[in-house]
Image (tube, rainbow, N blue to C red):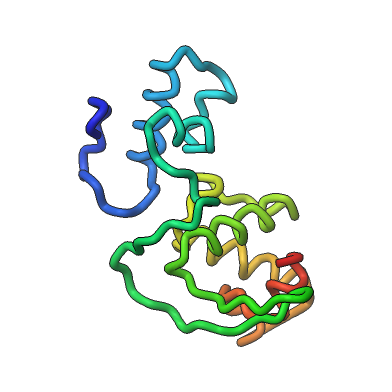
Length: 147
């Protein structure tokens, strides 16, 4: 928005259609085209905008409903699942995408309904049903995604 690209609903904290369009317009203004102007704010786009990419572990969180947290032991470290920690969500989205699950906006660091839907689809593909396929990435889900 500060660069002159319109997001009619303003800064909502969600990476939706309007944000995707604004990011694509910004990318095109940089001379990018085709897949390079996809509306996904990847590392290069964020760097050009002067924003630290999600892999730099943001220090602030946005206000949204907290979801239940679970603890996961993965490899030699313990990770506490927190949907408000952008780096954890960013890594989850990357793992889901690499396993073939679509998240239209890509890796955003925001745990919204589309990411939850992708988690649920992954869980169902693992043969889990009912409360095991709730869309919340618990220890088993994170382990099977390699996180």
